[in-house]
Image 1: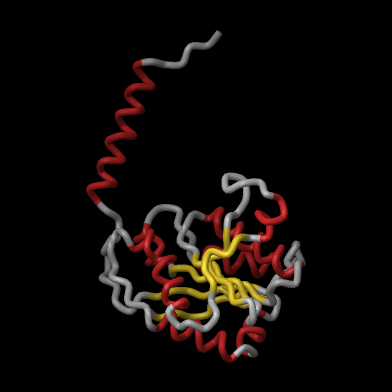
Image 2 (image 1 turned 45 degrees about the vertical axis):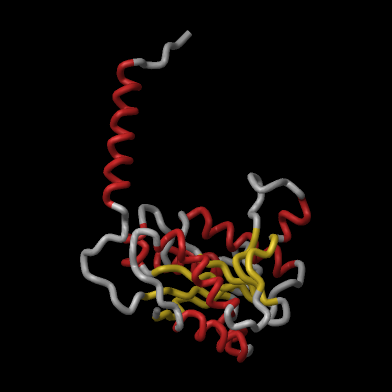
Length: 208
């Protein structure tokens, strides 16, 4: 798997380059990924990347409880549960983003809290490029969708605390026009949605 840095905010790339072990670990983990492209890629991507970091046995922890959850004890339904990867000595959090757009902003929220608590110096978000995100599903976050928003946000000094590095995943081999979605599952979902529409039209809600 190839990757490239597509966004650096708050001096993030300078911090990243100042930590040789971090640069080594990121390059070794991401360049070494060999993820077969298929409709299950979206679900397996975070686990595969986390395992690639942990396999290096260099101090990476996965699924670290977020400070928001530790502070508030609000429970899993109302607080971001964890950070995908953390290296306490290197003072960096990493989030692997392959969810919807809302989860991207939750990543930033967690980074800011941890930076303000002097837990991390840097937050890294690893995301698919546009072609891969479109193939993985609808409304999947991708780097280009947020790089401009982050640039504007930092230019306006809009509640940005933690330096953020945006890394884009680029598959080395990607067949043009190929979809990674499970076509049978998508057809079944469309049929279910149509049947529900039919039921609602037959039995409209009564109003008092």
